[in-house]
Length: 446
Ligand code: NDP
Ligand code: 2IT
Image (cartoon, rainbow, N blue to C red):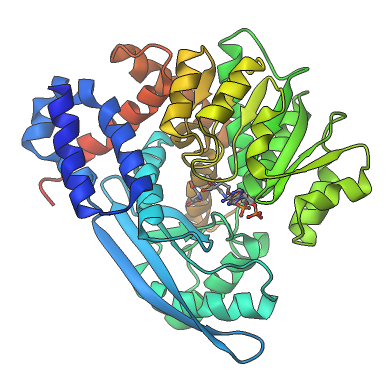
């Protein structure tokens, strides 16, 4: 039954979504994992649950015209894929990167459904973005772009309908401009976006949440091997929001982060990365990671981002982008003694790399479980907005830790129940899917 089931779902998905290879990849992984669930629950098949869950409820594509500082007009393409609202309003980030297309947004939105289910908070799955490149743009250009983007998006979202947030290329600055335009157009001050500034509805701890949550999740993976962070050498790819706060938490817990990267290359500092320098370069100056070696000449910069996986380490946290860690990188990590990999980015490991880790006895924390701390804390921001109050950093961090612990436990238990012991990829897919499937069953064929 297994092959026929997977083949029949994939045939439709591939026919309907032509060249969207990342989307095919994300769907195939989930569909392969849930074979034992579908075998045990014939009612899911009768209700067409899997056929429905792989088809977005709604996809919006729109023109985003804007004017640069020289008066020249540019046109970008904006997207919002509202994938599944079975357990709550659509929730997921916005990505601004030249590589964005509808397939990328569909893969991210699909992953978001199950990730959000795992958090235990009432949020459905969605994702959006634009092929706009914020790099090298002035603040005014970014503002005009964000205003144009929101001038269309506003009619499709709302605090009880769809709540976007940040992702690659969308941080506090962009969320501010997007929120300002939404407020102006609708004349409402509501929690329609998360990742807001602390003075206007944001939550303490949201900035740190994805990186911190990732490290809390990997802490549980290490504990299962009788280990903790003390003395562990850690390699983290990327040097954006996720990578920076993962680095901070690893350092607090006694590990040493020795490498970070951006799309140009990677730095290695065997004495431990000085995070203040990285934050100055990335958060304040919006510069490049290679500038690090100007201040720390004993560190090295190497051109080419993929080389980072050749740096020997105990723990690797890929936190840049999809498919950044392939079979070659995975084999290098394993042969250099890496014992744990936690995915900070969405789908950073190729299927071949995942296989290398699972076959090689590496503890592997898949993205939709390991990086769920960001969206979980977005849900905490929504709760605080609804109550019109703010929790302390300690309160938010305690809840985040509790959520990451619960996700880990759900993954382990689901893997155990369905005979895929120790496989957190299968565990995350099964536990997330079951929650969504039960809600879809209860709500009828809609
Ligand atoms: P940022 O924009 O803050 O940082 C992205 C980092 O990844 C930058 O260092 C960037 O380098 C690098 N990067 C991006 N694209 C590529 C590429 N094609 N090749 C190599 N490096 C690249 O984004 P985030 O830190 O927020 O996001 C990182 C990952 O984490 C993404 O996969 C995102 O989907 C995921 N994620 C984010 C969450 C969040 O709350 N922010 C939550 C859960 C997951 P450069 O500057 O050179 O482009
Ligand atoms: O991939 C993700 O989970 C995010 N970019 C965060 C989404 C959110 O709504 O906070």
